[in-house]
Amino acid sequence: MTIPYRLLAASLGLLLAAFALYALWTIPSLLPRWGASPAGFALFVGWLALAAAAWPLARGRWTGRRVWIPLLAVVVLLRLAVLGMTWGHVPAGDPIIYVRLARDMLAGHGLSFTDPFTGVTFRALYPPLYPVLLAAAGALLGLGPVMLWASNLLCDGIAAWLIVRIGDRAGSRPAGLAAACLYLVWPTFILATPFAQKEPLVATLVLALALRLLRLRAHAPKTGDAAIFGLLTGLLALTQPGLATMPLMFALLLLPVLGLPRLFALAWRSIPVFLLVMAPWWIRNGLLFGQFVPLTSTGGLGLWIGNNPHATGNWMMLPPEIGRLPELEQSARAAAVAKAWIIAHPVDMLRINLIKLVRTFGIEQFTLVRATLLRPALPAAIAPALLPLLQGALFTLLVATTGSMHRALHVKSGRLILLLLAAVVAQLLLFDLWFEFAERHRYVVMPFLFLTLGFAIADRNAPRPTA
Image (spheres, helix red, strand yellow):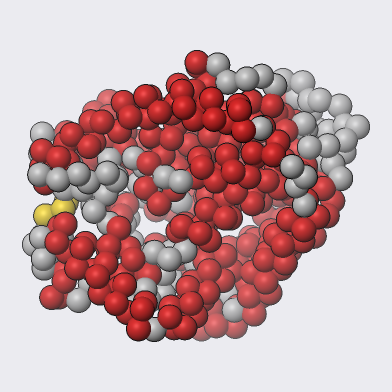
């Protein structure tokens, strides 16, 4: 099967160009809310200088410990600065809920969450893996800000290492090094380090899946490959149910490269391990609810949040008549209301979801929203200083990646990275867009944008860096 790489690159480039134009066009609407200060533009210029390290890395000009030790030191110091800035400030929303879930598990109360507004107790609202890992880390190190900071730094470090390995497997370790550098210095990820969040874990699992599939280029799947693939697939489903089909999308896009026999053998042999990973969650839910709950109880809620007359893609409270129902009944009722609205308003549904798509990829303000919810509040000067940095970095990346599509086609194995990027984008467009869909759902795409840019810069004749 011949892959139309040029058409694929053109389609991705056109999509990213549209997002870049929106990112620029929407800046005037962001300024009245957040403001922009000279310090913000200075921070943006400083980030550009830091991100520029990707160029000599991709070209193979910077190699060895003399380069990586200073870069990693900067990465850690920047995260330490953010930890200091947020020290003593308590977040709202998911970051504090995850800590409470972990604390309750350590106290022997199990995985449950009671909504303070409605009094409804949810036992399968949050996927279990991240709270369980948080509780395990908390049992050893406590559930304080240092542990959260260290766990996010560890996840970011593992994700960066996986990015390097993907670049290596695809044919250019320098390109992987450049992408890892961009990942580690991305402003949003640095600013999120002190908070309990599952996105770094999600990125790590998705990257590990991609790397495992790329290994099949070298040999037929072995028992260990299948076991790891099944394990990663199950862990991803238990972390971010919306990405449960991500392994399938990777396999479909890589099918012409890896071949059906190898992919079928991998999938078939991985099923027992996947079932073994999922079984405890299924058994637990069956005992609690008396019925099969495969992933979480959020499906219906997410569909309503993504499809109602006032939907923006961000979380919003359910109407009282739905929000006070028991957990599974609430989800079923919300799904029914959303489906009825979709059937009655198909044009509005498409319009709202198109708006969700461009806003998710074209705006970088979730960090600012999170900062405004901290108590006590941060100084008022923080938001005007961060908006130029965050939105400027996103616009720069979108423009750079758009311009890199054609070049990535002609660098050694750059086409493989385009297939991986296309798989993640297809996953979001086909499955995730129609539910709750906001900026943080875009974060899983970022490593593959960085890899695309790294391969576009890479010199096919560059020497392989030494450790």
